[in-house]
Length: 175
Ligand SMILES: [Zn+2]
Image (cartoon, rainbow, N blue to C red):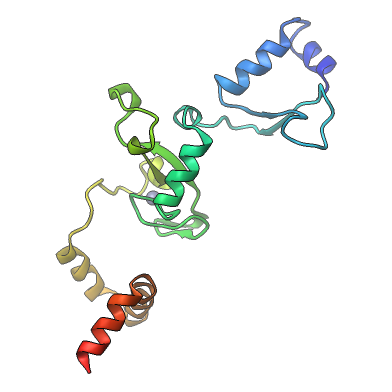
């Protein structure tokens, strides 16, 4: 969109530029300019996603986001799915990670890395029905015993990959 069209769309309001800024920073619409994309000319605007970003994500800096995603191993800290994998609670959806507050901002939580974590869109919407509590090993083992052999082997492979040293020690001790 060109700035002239925007001005017309805004009903001839001369403050359209301020409104675009408001939409970006306060309402979370991702409006790109020539500063964001080299194929755009100055005074051209693209609304990349018609859905605004959730308010909680906007206050968190890019650096904090990158740090937290790395710290959390690009894994949802509630259900444990990895970004890009299909969702265990809704197989039709690929996992998209967001950065969410641990203590809500309304309860005095900050935007610092210590108070945020990676969380997938399904958990973020409360759809997975998981509590924040981590499962105990007793509960995990009970679940694993009920799983199919194929799934158990898949789990074993994941564990071996995650804990190579411990795996080697276990194998050596067994011999
Ligand atoms: Zn999740």
